[in-house]
Image (cartoon, rainbow, N blue to C red; front, side, top):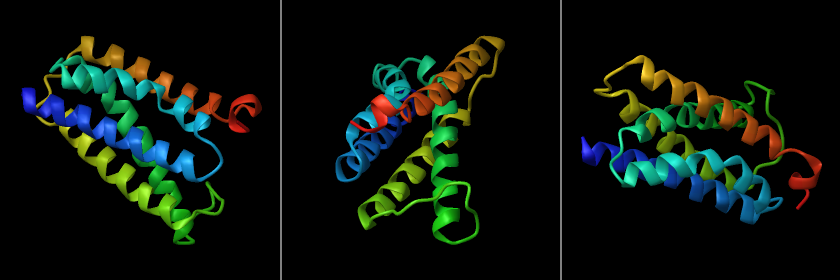
Amino acid sequence: MTNTLKIIGGCCLAVLVALYIVGAVSHGSLRHEVQTLPLWIPIIAGFNSREFARWCALPCMFFWFAMMSLIWLFLLGWSHLISGHFAPIEIAMTIVVGAASAVGFGLSVWRARWSFAGCVPIALFGVLQVLAFRIGFLPAIAHQ
């Protein structure tokens, strides 16, 4: 169980680092730093083997996998919900984020002991992740 929580923390860290790399090579890192703020809690909790990490990571991993899926669908020409130009390094990082998110999500639900108490952080971090993503697009942050 302890190793699972540390791997979940590692998956969150992989997502965070990959998105920081995207920010460094594209339009600026402040946007990605804001958008990944919710990941810090499951990173810290995971590396400290806290069960709380599982519930905090679950909505974040789902969110980032969904975002990467939309980018992949755009790159394949199958959907235009997300658009833009993606450099090769950005495309490579979508693979890293997608893979880490899938593993993190899978481990978060694997052998989980579901309870109402687990639903509270899931809902809270789902809202936090969506808000952080949206705040990252505010002009004062997006253009830094």
